[in-house]
Length: 113
Length: 116
Image (cartoon, rainbow over all chains, first blue to last red; front, side, top):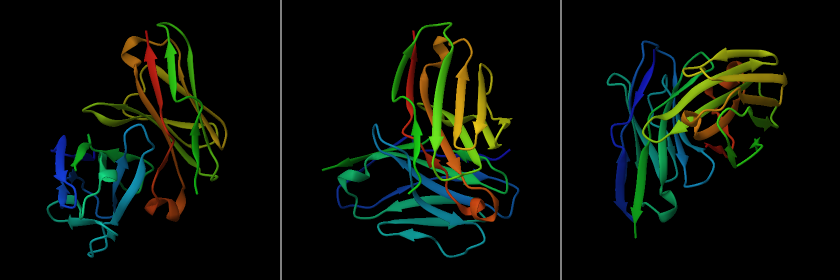
């Protein structure tokens, strides 16, 4: 079974600084997809960024980028120039050929003004 | 934009009551999901459906059932609510096929259920 591990239950970052959230996963598949989701307090969960495993280039979306290390099965999220609105719970997720997603336990990010 | 709506944001029920949580999506997605979210445990899949009247058990189906009579609607049913079912319930939908493989799941706003 696929597992997704987020080893940092809580993280904090100063406003305007950079923070990296860690995620590792376990799979025997070669073709799969990885996602980072953001869940602000009392608000809807939304997609931040996605990565296809067959692509070597790391995905970027504005201030958000990933460091995808396929051999190490690592998928970290880097948030640059952190803003107060980045404060949220962040979930890493894995999906393969089936319908299911597998989620990590989440990292709660605090942004300090 | 995809819209996934859930019938209630907050719900308070008593032990033993039958509880219905409704989810509706407007993107003609084949796949719909019900998750339970608890602190420190992340999201755990209860049930999912890949077509009308079709359902598959997820990781924690005990105590729950589901119904999908129409493509856009997926209901989660707690036959006899218990206090350990107090949680946040999230519904999601996703496209199927080749496009669906790379596509995200779209989430509803969640229903915070308290069972007293």
